[in-house]
Structure formats: structure tokens, C-alpha cells
Image (cartoon, rainbow, N blue to C red; front, side, top):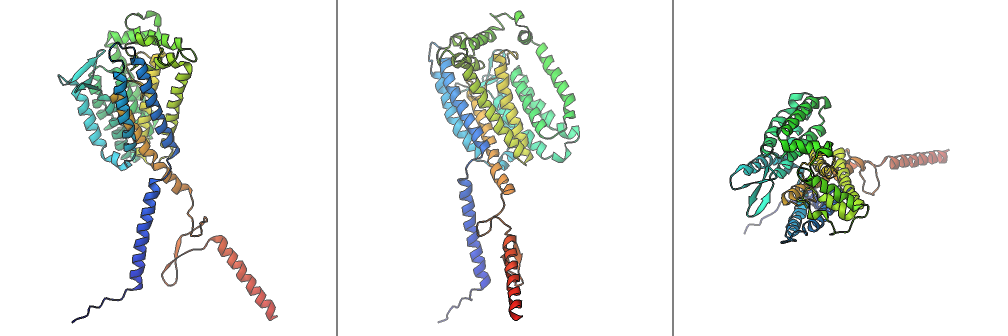
Length: 453
């Protein structure tokens, strides 16, 4: 019988095994640490305001649509269902890594454009108030241009991220961003939805601005864009009447093109400081878009000035959290995409509120998170999820950059390894400890000298 002998375990093999086990334990602790790391301030600000505005919006949609003679709660229930899907979707998207959004930038743009083209398919496309910007699938009406806003922000950020060192010249900044964006926005413009077109232009300008390109490069494109918008507005008599009515209300017919604008202002005036009470609005019986474009007027009438200020404060907190991400990140993709998304949501909110208080002409853009519309709500929640994913990258970077490493005793100090004469790594002592040891050594030497004398 032969006896099998195993080679003796060497010290290096034992050390390698202990090192591997230690590294596995360290990786497990790091993973658990990331899982239970408290969220950053930016994460809390964006997530809380998005959820509060969404819940507030469902309540106001319920109040605004309760005036319908048939199925008064159907619209609110549908909006609540979209909110129940959108809020978890926001947190699911927030768990995705930043690298994922970089990989799907091109697929998102292609899907967004193809989805928008469905509005021109016979049997699918739906027109409303002269705009052909919706599709109807299985009895549910969707607005593809809402997803196009998010797709453009992510795609432009990906393209400009790869050209950070070349953004000093105009052709590197605008090509291929501007031609592709013009083609994508043209699919919306073909449906005569000028309000959505203006929001999409804001997204493009926001991404270009936060890319770090020189401001002088925007002068000529801004002038050309303004000329294009004016030309498109002049091509429609109805649009011109709405624009002129915003600057000169005396030329506006309250029974025709200014019907909603006048009733919206009456609702705001009727609310006063404290409002007439939730559910007691009178203008919701007269406003055709009380739960959509003019939901802020219902807020002003039922909850008064205090309710309007609450909405403005929530959007302000959202903007502060988003701008903190833009300021603190070192990733150009995160900065550009977050800038485009922030300009989109805050700019659209200002457009909607400005229309209600008659600062801007009627544009037909919803109030983010609050207006009735499942597509608008889902796209806004997905955009917030991306911002939350960006916010998750902030604490780790700031902690690594600011916090000093700790040694084995738990105190701050240099723990850089150094090579000994035997070739093994050892931890360098702290400067304070080394100086104390030196003083002790010098004291011992002096005492020995005195004894010899």
C-alpha cells in the first residue's frame, strides 16, 4: 500500500489564504456598508419633494375632476394607479449604476423618436386642441414626447461627456447634438405642439450650458431659435391671438381664445390667502383643463396663497437638491444629464405657473408631478430616479476626498505601508508617536551618561 504524503504548508501559502479570507470579509463589510449607508441630503430633498408633489397632485386631481357628472372619481383613480407605479419605479431606477445610463443613451434616443412617430400612425394618433401629440393604446392615452425629453437629456450628456476636451470650438459643441436634436424635436413640431417643443429646447440648452461650453457659442443659435419660434407662431392665427392676449388682455375675447386664461385668473383671485377650502372650487366647473394645465389655478382657489407657496417651496427644494448634485459631482455625464433634467422639470413648472398667472401665453404644458396625465408623471418619476442614482454617487466621493484614513488604533494618521529590511510590509507609526519615542530614547541616553559620570 502506498502512502500519500502532502507537501508541507509553507508560510507564504498560509499568508495568502489569510489574505484572501480577509479580503473576502472586507468586501462583504463594504457591500453591507453601502447597503445601509444613510442617503445623502440631495437624495432626501429630491425624493421627498417628488413624492409629496405626486401625492398632492393626486388629491388635487380628485378635487378638480369631482365636478364631472359621470364617473367623477375615475380620473383620480387612474392618476393614483400611475402614482402607485411611478413612485416604486423612481426608487428602482435610483439603484441603477451611472454606467448603465451611459450604455443605454443611444437606445433611449432611438426608442424615444420611434415612439413619438407613432402619433402619425392612423388609428393610433390622437389630436387634442389642434395638437397631434398623443396615441391611444387599449383605451389609455399616452404622450410619447414626455419620454423624448428624458431620452434627449441622457443622450446629449453621453455625447458631450466624450468630447469634454474639445468643447472650445462650436462644431465640437453643436455637432452631432444640434442636428440630431432638431430632427427629434421636429417630430413633435410636426404635430403642432409648440409648448412641448419649447420644453425640449430648454432640455437641449440646459445640457449645453452645463457641459461647460463657452457662452459666446450660444448667441447665434439662440437668435436662430427665437426666429424659428416666432415664425412658427406667426403661421397660426390662433397662436398669435394667444400671444397677443398675454401682452394686451384688452384684445382678448373671454368667450373664445382667452376663456381658460380668464377663468384661471378668477380662480386665483377667488382663493385669497387661505382659499375656499379643499373641494369647494367654483372654477373647476368652467375650466375644461382644470385637472391638467390649470391645476395650479385650482390649488390657488381652494388652498389660497398658502397652497401656492407650498407648491413653489417644494419645487424650490427640488431645484436646490438637483443643483447640489451638479455642483458636487466630478463626472461630466452626471453634471450634464442632471442639468438637462433639472432645467426641464423646473422650467416646465415655471411655464405652467406663468400661464396660469398670465405671464406667458397659453402653451399647453402640464405641471410636473401634479397635472393629470400618466405619461407625464411616469417620465418625471423616471427622471427623478436618475437624479437619485446620481445622488448616490455623491457621499462616497466626498467621504473619500475629505475624511482622513484611520489606523488600527482608530485615530487619524498616516497608515501607509512601508517595506522593512526583511521585505515585509509594516504600518508606519504616526508622527506624534515617533517623536515621543525619540524623546524617551534621548532621555535614556542622557540618564546613562550621568550614571557613568
